[in-house]
Image 1 (tube, rainbow, N blue to C red):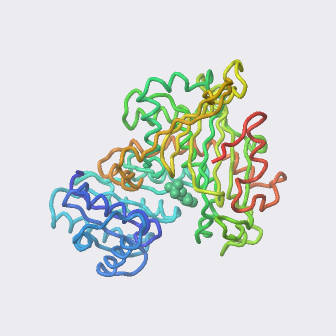
Image 2 (spheres, rainbow, N blue to C red; image 1 turned 30 degrees about the vertical axis):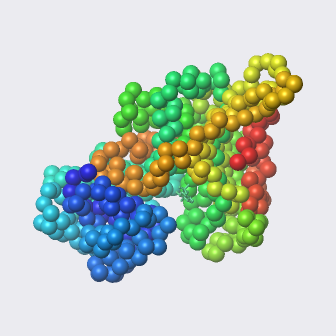
Image 3 (cartoon, rainbow, N blue to C red; image 1 turned 135 degrees about the vertical axis):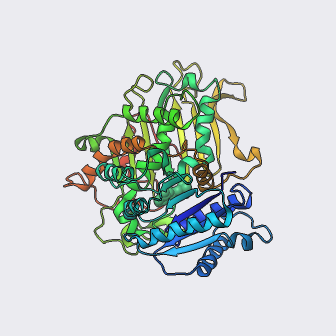
Length: 490
Ligand code: BG6
């Protein structure tokens, strides 16, 4: 278990804290993973006393789908760990109160003033909170460790991400900074490294000699979920591509690290990101496709188009779908395109990485010559499958595709929430699953041409909407793959 510590959640009454963080912390605590000397200070702008916050948090736990099974008496005990402070994040008073909370925790339980500050706020507050903590010297590690967890999106383009990194480094050392990308906390995403580097048979094939291309898909059936304020500013490129999809790509394409430890892994991730061909704005039309959903039908229900969602501007140009082709200029991947696609209001929720192999060199049998596919099902229905050709029973030598399938169910364990995993890692000081400064920077470098092209004077803009809710995105996405390739039907 981690040493005695206080978790300070900024934005404690926000949506993320309510739906994901509080349930994750509760689960860890209930399983005894946070030790006994642990408490939580919620910080928000909303005026509330401790009792009101405790009620709020307990209610959140009771209503969130993510909360583990609650053991008898657990909620009452967990309640005692909760405190609350409020104030304006631009002023010093609230940070002074946070400092008093750490003093109080120290007196109550001893054992140091270790603290994890979790910034679960709108991105515009990351810098003010980081600086406010700094003005109170709360980053100083002489009395205990101090770490800061920063939510996504980290910046809104390359320039602002760099400014944010600079502002944060004026207060914190990089070793204290934990930028969160919850996809890295997913069990199945970690398994990518396990399968690649824990087996002898995959890595020899994992290169331009055998792989035709790679497809990475993160489709969602959900629409806006009342998040227009955020999403109109972000759009799919900032919300999903720059972070989650780039992480999936990186783990698929990177070289083996020299050791399974934070910096060795992150060095390799940066190396492959550096090798990705940059996309200048004028090449964007060749390698990237965007879409925005119109009204349509999903699961037998009619759903409104993006522009009809509450609080979305009628003429909104915000993309809700993106597909992009990445080329990696290194020895391993020369000539092997990586196709990434993600979108809202597609037919279903599925995240998958598919390594599509080259065809056999010669077709000896009728029906042969299919491409083998190794597919990592990140979610749902977590597992890994390998598609290959086999003789179909009968007199004739006719081949048919079959699938060998591993399912996580086989372990008989429930997969933990990515937030639990990442919170615990941050408490333990393990940064392996957190993107480092240079990783974030490179990911922005790769997508920034796309943003420039689409957000500047944009002659090539398609007419939105260009796909109906409940379909697999705009037609142009099919052409992106080039002749002889098609998106997997998921
Ligand atoms: C979040 C995005 O980071 O990831 C959401 O802001 C998206 O728009 C979500 O729905 C998807 O996460 P998951 O874990 O459900 O695949």
